[in-house]
Image (cartoon, rainbow, N blue to C red):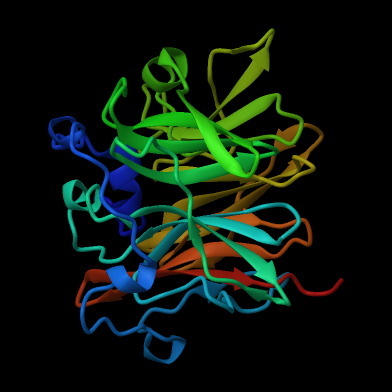
Length: 323
């Protein structure tokens, strides 16, 4: 059974997206602010009204709390990726989790957004445009390294329902939108991914054959400009779904999402003598998709549920305690 943290990611990484091809010839919708796109009467879930708050299992961090500032809304903020300096955060946003993806494609707001920290607070987010103005796309799962972004997208030119694409930052704008290619998308079946700081190894989740169950985490190494045959990271995988990997800058910590007690949870494995150790549970109960800054602060997605139905999602941060 798929758990709730897959709901939004399935739109971007697992769905067949049958309506996409039929609608690609339409003009892109007019862009709106996140506030303008929220459903009428939408009420923000707060920590005090959250029936299932995240549970911290580590004494290295303070209790997770909603990211302060202008990032979270009464819609769904998901799949956060924090840059190492901790001052820029990319995330996926959709105003209403109950809207099907074929309508999200046309709403002018669902997609990747970015917020920057200024004067000690997160500022209003801006939409990240990753398609030409006369074409449609539904994008998410951003990974940014230097001037290159990797992202998942449902759009014309895909090799499967949802492919990984890349873009390059030039003069403050993302351009050069390029499909990541047949090897990565069709043969390796990559989903959400993370490339090590040296650019030589990509960790990704995938349902490809040879795994232990659900999604597994795999790695592929870059050699002579080509991504090599994937290797299953057997030390961290289980019969559950293991995915949404994140590597610390030093490459010695692998963070990921796995189901625990029926809901998504954040795990960490540490590398010793070149081998990944036993994963340890860090945060449970509707917590997933970890990302860390260079100060070691942990950013996660927390989903809110009511009557067994997901109603919203926010980005949370668990500050690392002063050592």
